[in-house]
Length: 338
Length: 302
Image (cartoon, rainbow over all chains, first blue to last red; front, side):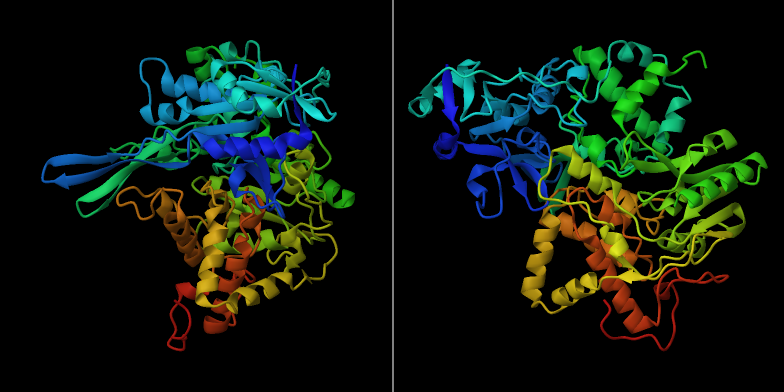
């Protein structure tokens, strides 16, 4: 089997970075996220392949928080599109975990299937190679297995497996992966190493039946109760690797300007505000309910699997301790005859 | 603290059972030691879940905004900083005093459950859990300033001076350096609005950032719009921030928002003071910038 020796890691990242933007899990100040390898300050920033995961998800690589779509010039009733900003620069996501790789699968389904291809997303996605880091040590808030994900088999072009020893097993999974592996073939070794055993999960979730049960729970009193302490900020939706709601707005200076897309959050009042002045989700209860129904019911109905990937970030970051695992448990226990 | 916890439970049970309040806001314990989170108890039975411990850090006065439109009577527990939040709401006419039953607790300083979560998460490195949350190391009012019942023994202010020093450091920067500092600081912002949501002084029914016609502040996550967001929010806080520190605590990307709020409090005190927001409740009392006086300074501010 192919082995990436740990002392070759930087060489390989440097080599890959010659032809593509390589995003790696990295510490930054008190935080961590996926950042371009080229921008790393080795004095203060650490490559975090050995950590469980990073705090800020890699969502923004394929789906930037703000992206300029096209520039426009208006003359009377006519609008001319001057330039379209599709970004097809090659990029590599190195060291992503199975939960976050699943989130990319979710976004692929949303942006590329069911009759419409989002050209902006597609331009980036077609030029992105994913090298995932298989997980063997689930953290205290990890529950990907409960959401139907095998942390040791992430959906990726290449999978690396930390043998805890000197190297990573390098497993090429797709044609795109093969092209990349070929470029660094001389830096990989041929050796037999054994992948570790997956350690047991500390947080267990039984998702089976939840989507089905939620169908009859739209008016259930549970939402009022569970949402009482939600402060209605957007942290959960913005640290979530799979939340993908966006807004498209325009910025104009006189008759020139551009359209851009930016992340939006179902936790915001304005998200569901209607042009006529109404708002079908006037309070925290309705917004809170929508978030969990989208994650656990609507997405499953449309795509066959839930929109939660069990990464646990929302559990860590919620200022008031709202916990999706607890919500799933409460839904399972709820009496639907109420 | 066990004793205080038991007393709160008793008070809440009594108030709920007698129908003196419809809801009692306190805390309950989560699945782990470091997990204490807000609870809205609606029955004496619910009240049995109440705890008050070293992680009861949330400013519950913020939750009153959820009830402002009703007639329900609300009981709640406040620490020193949180009690200033109640004065904020009363002065802003968001609540009337008779709808509240306030249980004040003299606060020895809290630990931050969010920080504990982060440390245990495996997602971050190099952070340690301090004995006291950052916001509690800069606390001038540990004892409630408004209450119906007071628990615990009086505490001394614990102001480390670190924040003051940082404010001075920024004051002493050249304009370019300072602009650079704010540019860098706010480039991290992900615009989740958690600072606004956790803030008791952010009680506008329609926030300027949610206005669409016209849209006052752009929604792009870039230097201009991020700076604009924080600038507008800062000015709205001037003379109104009660320095509970929740904005900074909940920020998922560690933006030092209290540096800005401290600077504003300092300037308001200097130019329009002596003034500190929310330290004394008076009938028809108003924050310094909501009143006009001929003696007001024309210097410095804005």
